[in-house]
Length: 264
Image (cartoon, rainbow, N blue to C red; front, side, top):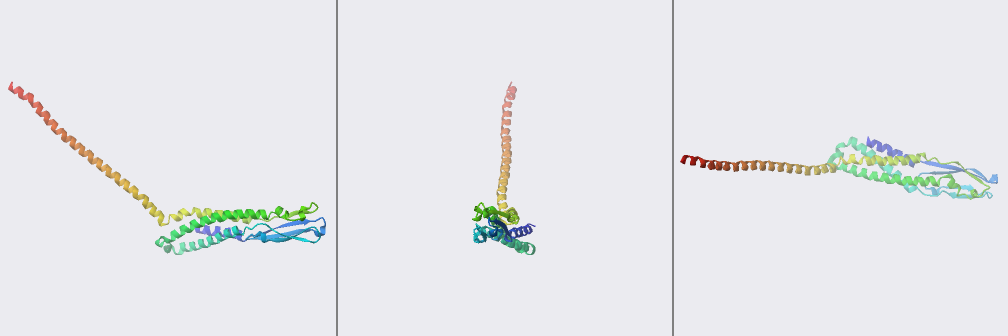
């Protein structure tokens, strides 16, 4: 079941991020209506190299157009996130096949559980790093594609006689979902570390190491109890032996008055 969740969560993570494409629309209403452009479309998509996204806007100074570009580049964090998701998907799919059809090979010489444990730890770390980096990258994408920030780049919008406004903003719901699934994948992989570790030889050897000192301690305790019992019995024996001669002495001392009576 865990492998199935890994496969599904990885698919959702890279699909919602890698398959994204969005855009925004702006309008520039110049004082001279013939120079206006009320539908300026700016499209962007994965991997979010926003500095390469160019568009033209009117300057409201004749028919001259101003060529601008968005700011920022979040391609490194986005591509790293999608790469981790794709490799996690492929590994989980392969592990599912091994668990179902090659269970004996998986447990042979304890190699399968050890490899699975190491890979699980590595992917847990990669999911944490990738999700955190992509969350920061998404924040930068939101700022760079904010219509208010884009309007500040236009020279025509700095003139009070011209009216600049946003027609619609980009929809980021799928990108927000990708970040959520990234951290869910981290929780899923990290939470599975202990269960994978229990299948390795390290866990069983650790249990044997802890049980040996306890056995030695219990055996030494039983040996100490036996010596105490033998000491008690020997002590009682010596005490009875020492009492024997004292009674004989007492008998010899009491014979003294009886002989004195006979003499009389």
